[in-house]
Length: 514
Image 1 (tube, helix red, strand yellow):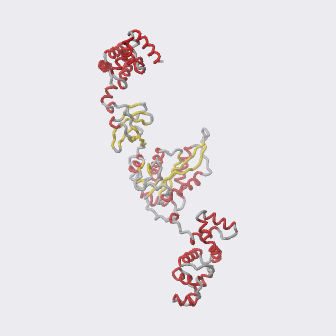
Image 2 (image 1 turned 90 degrees about the horizontal axis):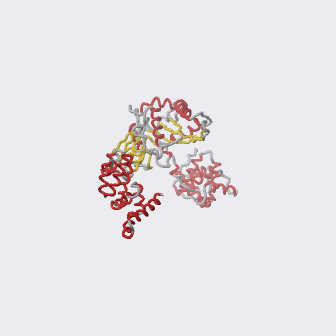
Image 3 (image 1 turned 135 degrees about the vertical axis):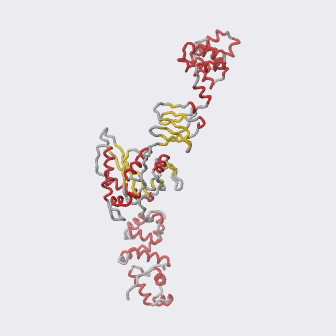
């Protein structure tokens, strides 16, 4: 009679009774089975390496053992019998795994001569009898994507390269973009990985493919994604605009989940081996050219695992037509920067100061910097536009508060009028400076009146009176105020002649100037 292959459903009850020491007739009568069936199942168990020695097994233990035996295969009886020699060590192994790794436990048992099984056999025993399968380690095959659906993007390190000019050692990275459906690769070597490089590489990749997929799947790089959030990733603004321009959606991979973009993860070692290893280049421009040739001619010749044709054929026949066509107007390369509005109503962009309406002082704005313009935004609201300039300071007077505009527009007439408001001594000193020096002394007069931002008008008037007896210069007034000589005058004059006081004041002013 042909033996029927053991299954858990049919045989667990028979084997539980058999291991417990019951005879064939008792098992058959208790379970309502024929003695031939019971004898047949027991014979199969013995042939697979199971015995009646040792403590009884529960139904769950028999199911695990039979499942492991089925995984071993019907022709592996000898190996399974060896594996069952681990059963007497079951409790010891289970306890040891709480403190050590599986490899360490196996090695110590083997070195002590207590087992001769191989590590794969030991590992299968632990997985089947002690530890449940870790669901996090399971890999589920993704359904094959639609053509034109997604592009996976990543940076990978190629290696080091010695620049022949100067002999400098440089680390070369590869920007790799892979179309998920066809497996078509684009590789662009880079030396830096800043935001401009990130955007430029995307533009070149889309030009290479001749269109854009609907989804871009990238790492959570700061050049592209500002915060790693599955449901609301904050994208670098220039990157978001690039995707919007091409009708695509950026879908960042979860942090520390490389399987979210498996095709480009596998592509990076392939690029490193096929394109980079064992080659020498005379210059970085040559590296970039050769990478483009490799992307166009070498990589597409490999055969696609699912469709059975080359990647080039699959791309030309199916994926190219499924991509979103490139816009007629090319994307204008821009860079977004955070810019704090300082108390002087200016922001600093690449060492150049640009004015912003004074109502935004203290805010953090976003600066959109292109080749021709600097545009400043408060959220999505445009607040100021400047023509990009290489000068150190670009100021639109309309951006300043009215009183500050008046300050900057201080003409000689305005300065005389303001000095008159301070006092007769201040008016005399300003008038003297402007009469003898003309416009060359205007900045000195303006600096003199700016002292009102720090000192009271009465003190400035007193300091000007003292300075008129000396040289009548703005620096003298400033030194008098800094040394508090205007206040000391009030204390000393009742007991000291004016001449003696002025003589002493001149000496102190000279000392302060030094």
